[in-house]
Image 1: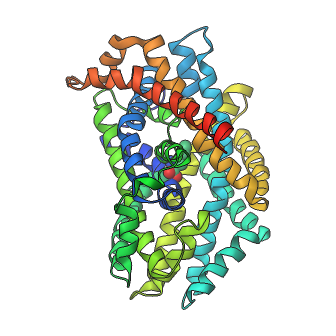
Image 2: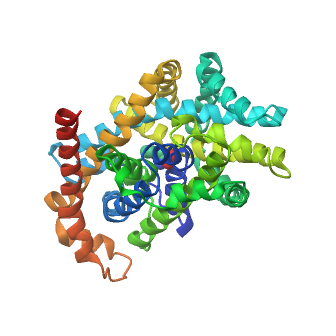
Image 3: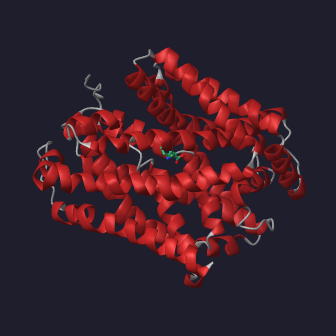
Length: 439
Ligand code: PHE
């Protein structure tokens, strides 16, 4: 088994992991899930879950990856030889496949909106026309499929040639640009008429709106947004240098990822309330709100082009990390070359992507099942692996490999061993009981 390449600079490994984490999950999915689940109370639960559940899972994935120096399936085979733990890697492959199928459809929409922005078709639309445009886009299967195929083509080209590093280099410049653009959009959004109502929705919690479904959705969103529970971060962990501090790296990714999601919320809800768009508009929320802001600002045309293009690139870097899971699996499992593996993975993802583009039911089924079931289940077994197979001492040694003492180790280990598995297990149980007996 080949050791993964180590990134020489500190920024390298963190940047690729952040590139996977920051994407449509923050800017498209987070606002619409929050909007459907009551707003600020959801945000608080989301923050809580991110700190006490998602962060320990991310640290676990990084540690497993760096310890083994391999990607998910191979890492489990190496660390627990002869045992069945590698099924976590296999379930990650299934999960990558499910996510990528609907993810690329949305990535296709962002690319199509970039095109519309360039040719000026997003300009001077009124609120109704903006909403109609999204409805037309999402129901016009030819358009959806065309732009999705373009995205898959771009990913396949990058992955087949193994030039992901090049893309990451660009995104190190482009992602901060997206971040700045979002700040400008936030400022415009909060200065619109009636913006305070949207801000209150986002920041003023009403706990009566917190249903079991909302709590479950917050957990799923935390996993989805950080790309955890399926082994992608195990692969990126294998890139992390022994001289780097894993907890600190994980923490920076959590913070970056959260800030981008929060900015998306601040950008979208004041605007939605100002234009009378319901916060629970579903997966189209970003697309039915943002064009309205661009129409209300100076240089809105340029801003709209830049925003949708950068969003498409953010989606691309996340999608590449998912695609890479499929390609490495096909290569290892069937002993085929990178190019062949890429072609097979592209054809399969396009086929299932078409089903998602045609059927909104399949689209939301995949969206829900991946985030709310597959990722939490994967995370459950990943954290169990630590106390059962690795043990306290080996984890500590890995976390302190750079020479820094891990002061919060006992707390972290307690979270990994007890709180995270228990929380995931009880949430599952609670929801199953609720769905069976309450609905
Ligand atoms: N985290 C990515 C996003 O926020 C999506 C993703 C999930 C990527 C799981 C890889 C694995 O857009």
